[in-house]
Image 1: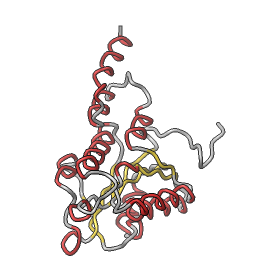
Image 2: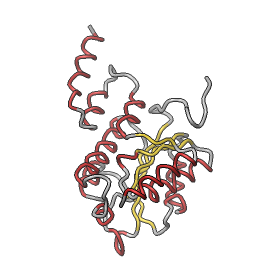
Image 3: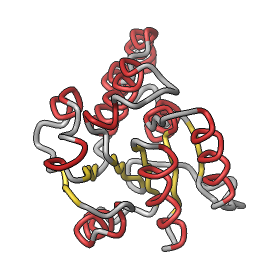
Image 4: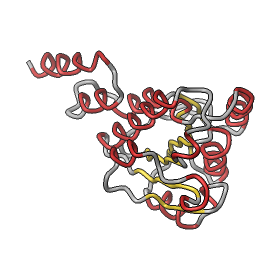
Amino acid sequence: MNTSTLNPSPLTPDNAALILVDHQVGLMTGIRDYSIAELKHNVVGLAKAASALGLPIVTTTTSTESLWGPAFPELQEALPDQVFIDRTTVNAWDDPRVEEAIRATGRSKLIFAGVSLEVCAAFPAMRAVREGFEAYVAVDASGTFDQTKRTTGMQRLIQSGVVVADGASLMVEVLADNASENAGEVYGALGMDWAILVSQVRSSTAA
């Protein structure tokens, strides 16, 4: 198969992991490229879809007690058993516990999302590429504080060999088959109104 960093092989349930960085109450209040409600919807949908697909998930926060507060409640509710690694490093990967958790997933393709896009998502994603992983950023689950930061952050990611996409597309790529038993749960998590069609596909396939 002919692949490159610009056109990598597909994401699958066996090769992908999700890393959520700093979706914290304090940081969310500064988001300007999405409404807070839309960003929360996208982040929670991504987390739930990844869970439905059985992907390993690593979550981290920065200085919850002194700076940005906890992860926003809807995300904690979506991942009730998840441990959020609280750190002080700007780049999440620079915390040994976070790096260890990422490497422990055993996955070669890492999907990042974070607040902010150009720092919390971008820095560990770029580090992942330097460490030999394939890195993706779900940009619609990674808000930021103004248009300049969004534009330059996206450019830097692409320049660094990170794949940028929306979270739903990444999860659907992992799903691969609408007849899969967890397809309905994945589409439901992503909030797609046409998710009801999935059950019809599965019924017709089984017939």
